Amino acid sequence: QVHLVESGGGLVQPGGSLTLSCAASESIRDIYLMAWYRQAPGKQREKIAVTLNDGFTSYSVSVQGRFTISRLNAANTVYIQMNSLKREDTAVYYCYADPAGGTSPVVYWGKGTLVNVSS
Image 1 (cartoon, rainbow, N blue to C red):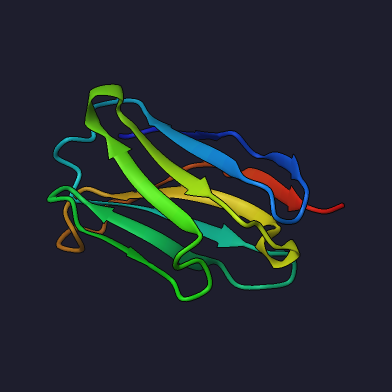
Image 2 (image 1 turned 30 degrees about the horizontal axis):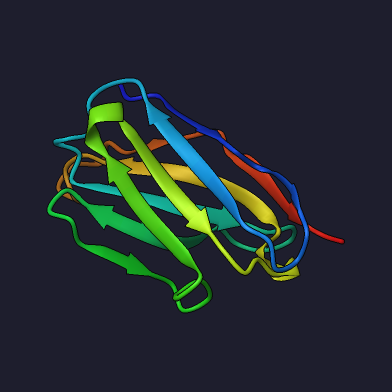
């Protein structure tokens, strides 16, 4: 059982920056895939950034070029640096871990942290 705890959310003005953290309860070195999702009010949950344990990263079109995902194995933490924030980035942001890369049904979710982009 891996517990994921997100932090760093809050109120930020449009154009501002914010970094979210996802702290895992155990080593993430061997977790194949970790990702950030978000869910805006009235919308479906959206996958926005992925990091694999070989260093590969990918992003949704909606955040490409503005957000950066990173994994610090020594701290058992995954980050997402969010720049040039827009009002439409307002959402609850969730951390996700898939240790086996889809070969097992066991995955883990954090409880989320709210990001509110508003002036």
